[in-house]
Length: 309
Image (cartoon, rainbow, N blue to C red):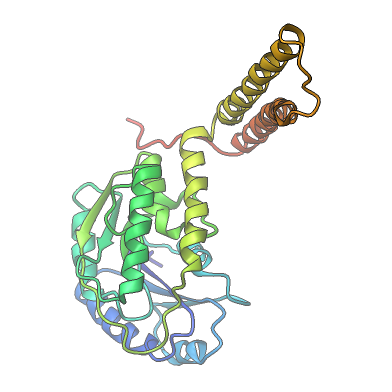
């Protein structure tokens, strides 16, 4: 059987009111492309009738992945990507806020030499609090990781299948996929897409996602700069900490033997000892991290080959 050319991955959690309408609109758009396609819904442990609605849809192009419980959007997307067979993979939300009619435009831009095209909800139809947190997150991403994508949180994106070779997502890292791909050397583009108000169901967004996303951003930043040389980070911190402790210790020795003053009750003495101990520990962490990184790269590579001529 011929493999599909396009795979659409949709994570769904408690979206019983939206799923069927999304499927109908999406299937009409995909049929108009005259390409073989598959639609993959990932039921992320829904507690409503979402799975029942999906099972009632009779379509050979439909694939349903059912999680035992709610594992989150990143896990759902990762499962969908790994079970996709299409050369082009489209990711989108199940809440009808993403518009399937933007898919042909995403694919068209992808074929202009891009590996990933990220949707940009330039007229976003969300609450002010969601827009505020997204704006703050965008500033943090730009400052920490030099991420220039306008709307990394938009799920609607188009990818080439090769983007997900040796790529495993976890935590809240689905919003950093364009950044991770850019780090790996893939060409990432953007496209303005439509965004609609949520009419049915409840949003799954919460302020805690901002903090979890920030921690995952730190992981991406670490992986981007120190994934092959963690000793440079931990060793650098260790040297700075140890040298600071030694300088304070020399100052205390000057006070003790030159100025003939007591130092036993001085807080600086405890600080000096603490900084030296922390310095040694940081360097040891660096050695251990370096060993683990070497073991990791024995099973994979730290580079990506575009082509062999």
